[in-house]
Length: 293
Ligand code: GLU
Ligand code: ZN
Image (cartoon, rainbow, N blue to C red; front, side):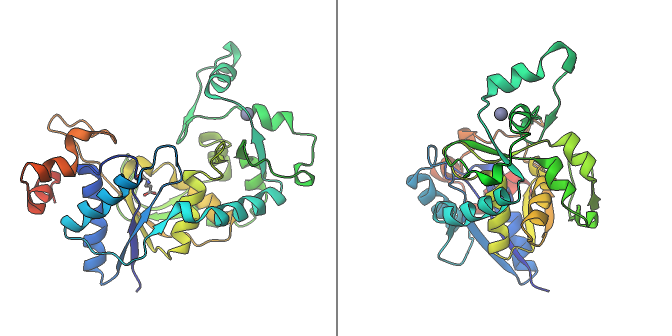
């Protein structure tokens, strides 16, 4: 069977132990399966991405002994693909513009009658303020706004899916609560626990969720290897795969590297940058030992 996996870092800071752990698991699996290990640079956030971080990623991964085919896929080269997918979803009436900022959302969900705000993979579940605002309009007759955030009307999108057997994925490792094997969910669960996610961020022209789904499909990824912190987001990805007629790969959500006190390493923990260990004379074997591989 073909096995293609990937490591998809964002060039917004140095790679640290947690990144090395994820990349090594993916690369080791590809080797064991006689498959392919691909690299993808997730640089849609141009305000935070830097060329020198990208260069450092290549340098650190090569030092760790990894190989990957060139040229590497970079999300900033794929804006036209994201734009076309958004047009497709807009034309079906699944999207609407949202002008709420964090404060508006917090205010709308903290009204006394609302109870405690519910949290989903992207933070507070969006209360639907802008969806209600546009409820009587046929937005497909209007051009899609390119500089505002655009959200997915999850209820409308779910209603359009007739084959609910596609609402599942295979977990090859485990979720944070030990979830493994076939992970199935219902449209109602999606609506209640995810809500209307942003598919195109303001002035960005895409979002993590939309890009990751389109890119995994374009790279023909069969097994997504990534941290358990993204387990909850996978249901959004499956929904987008169904809406965009893309295959659903298998997922391997690994545990997260913890420090000696058992605390999860922060994503931005420069004290554990690979470059710092390298400067101190560590070897790739030392890094493997440090992350428990
Ligand atoms: N760019 C993402 C991150 O660094 C990776 C997401 C993924 O593997 O799906 O967290
Ligand atoms: Zn809004």
